[in-house]
Amino acid sequence: MDDDQKNHLICEVADWYIGGLWQRGFEALSGPEQVFRMVWRIEAEVNNGGFDQWFFNAEHQDVAGAVEALLTIGAPKMADIVRRACVAWPQGRPPVDIRERRAFLVKDHGHEGSIGSELDRDFLCYPEDLTDLLHRFVMKNASEILGFTAVRSRVN
Image 1 (cartoon, rainbow, N blue to C red):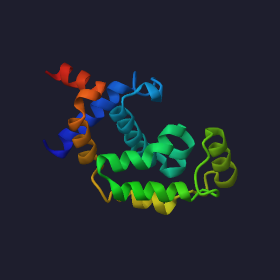
Image 2: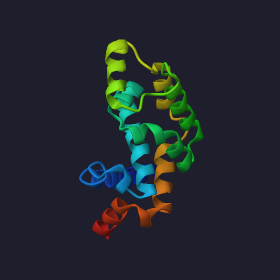
Image 3: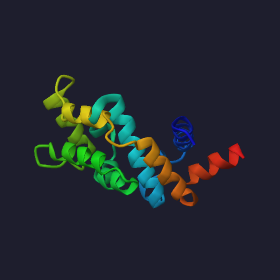
Image 4: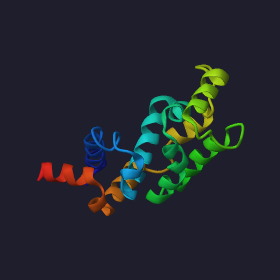
């Protein structure tokens, strides 16, 4: 399977989840679904607006588990970048409460500053191929990822 096909499959799984994965409570997801969601979300948010956007929009579980999720799919370099973005916060970690994170980002950084502009660049250089790693993870855990099952049954 080439990179475009892998990316297409992953995007279809994510699209299927738009009505389920993103609406279902985090705790209701299987472990592999949680990993998929965390990796998908951080990549989408950082690509769209950097770490500031990710910290602004992400739920606590997404922030707290992102490093481990990236390690789970085999992306230690990406995990280290995320870890460095998390420890860049004044208390050495982002606040659990999303309102506190948002208030800090708006008050102290607004649109001019960034918690991680250098880290944004490091992440966006993709020291590891997240598409390939996430595809491998989905294939390995297909039986526990409902979106994959739904997408495959629609295609077959």
